[in-house]
Structures are given as C-alpha cells and as structure tokens.
Length: 127
View (cartoon, rainbow, N blue to C red):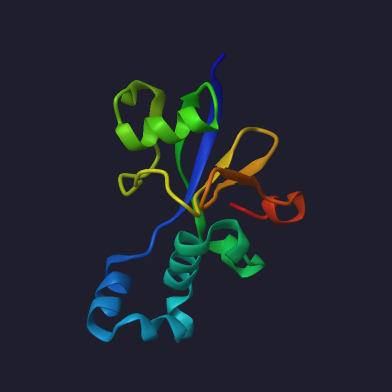
C-alpha cells in the first residue's frame, strides 16, 4: 500500500553558496548565513543537531508516493520512477540527512543512520 510523504528541505541560495566559496566555512557564523548553517549542521549530524530556530528554513519541495520511508528515500535517490515523485520545487535534491518527511501524522527526519521521528512539539512548527 502506497503512502504520501511530503518532503521538506532546506535550500540555501546561490549567493549563500558563493559566499562560502569566497570566505570559507567561517562565514557560517554571520547571522545572515543562518539557513546555510542549519543545512550544514543537519547534513553532518542529523537529528541530534536539530534546534528550534532551524524550523523556519524548511520548505515543502515534493510529495512522494511510496510504500515506506525507505522506499521514499530510494525513489528520490535513484530517480527510477519519477511518476511517484511530484516536485513542487525545481531545486529539490535527492533525499539526504537532515531532510524531513511528513506522512500525514508524523514528521520524520532522515538521520545519519535511518530515520528519526521528530518530537511533535518541534514538528508542528516545520512549514
């Protein structure tokens, strides 16, 4: 049985990437680089790095029709059945550590190994 999973990702801007390339990772300490810092921390450390301020940087980028979380991960990494992936953003990237899936009940973060359900008090604020 297929489920619908909404995919949320943090998507830094080209300007933020360009600044990192110019100035190095130290630029992440600047307040205007908060989105890039959230992306970097979650990509490296997964759910254990999640902090409440990061919630403002997640945006829905796709809906995946999948049989399980693992199937959703596979579909958005192999891209072998794009009829089951509805992209809401052209900038959507393959599902990876730090991204969030919503199954209609729970918000689940792709963790460094497997998946971790995000505490509902935090998850309700992901938008």
